[in-house]
Image (tube, rainbow, N blue to C red):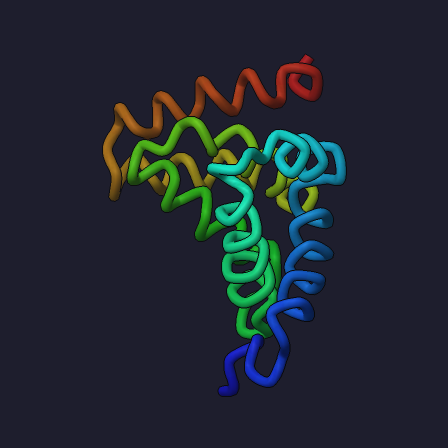
Length: 133
């Protein structure tokens, strides 16, 4: 399989990445992230847009729902709570139901530990409070 960014210029990869990043995370989130970029972080924003979003998230091998399941699992396993809320919202935009997200968190409990799942459920409860009533 040919890498998704092969043959694309950095500018093309950036544009492709920005399109996917906005679709997954929302325009509002991306606008806040890019507006907050400083001299220190501007190159980082460019890098994650080109590589994470333009190369990896743009690959045809997995659909966005599947990528969201993988991301949620990884964030829970590694304790990256600061990004979990953002990717829980992204998972809903990518078509996961609340029941499917619950199952991802339950599955994570077995392989990543009960404390990791407990924290993930707490964060999910905060993120989806309006939907849960």
